[in-house]
Amino acid sequence: MTTNRRHVDAPPGKVWDVLADGWLYPLWVVGATRMRQVDETWPAPGAKLHHSAGVWPLVIDDTTEVLEVMPGAALRLKARGWPAGEAEVLLTLTPEGEGTLVEIREDAVSGPGRLMPAPLRSPLLTWRNRETLRRLASVAEGR
Image: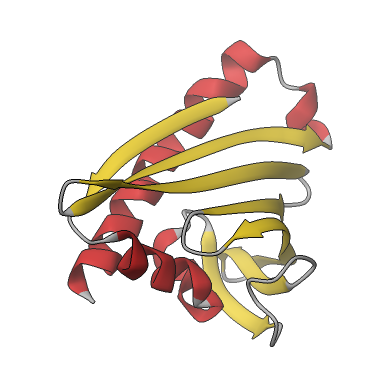
């Protein structure tokens, strides 16, 4: 499992507002390129985001599902990204001064991505999630 952390110059409520607005998902998640649908109950457990990944004409439609939620503090997701597989992602928000410490933990849980040895998989996830947190910070700080 990889772990990335970033201080965001916005209070946890503002960061949570970004996570809780499923339509903003492609703005901060590396790889997601558009939203097709957001379940009305997002971010309740079982709710799904219906998103696409890739660059046209090579676009893949998939979903991300909420596994667990602690409103304002944590969001655990199952992100599907076939043909690579599925990953479990945990985002946590901790007050830090005037801002928020955001932590993202991710690892492949099924599919071909899980077959890739961790020493090869981890650097890719670390790079991707460093950029994901940079984008999340930009959206939350700009709101």
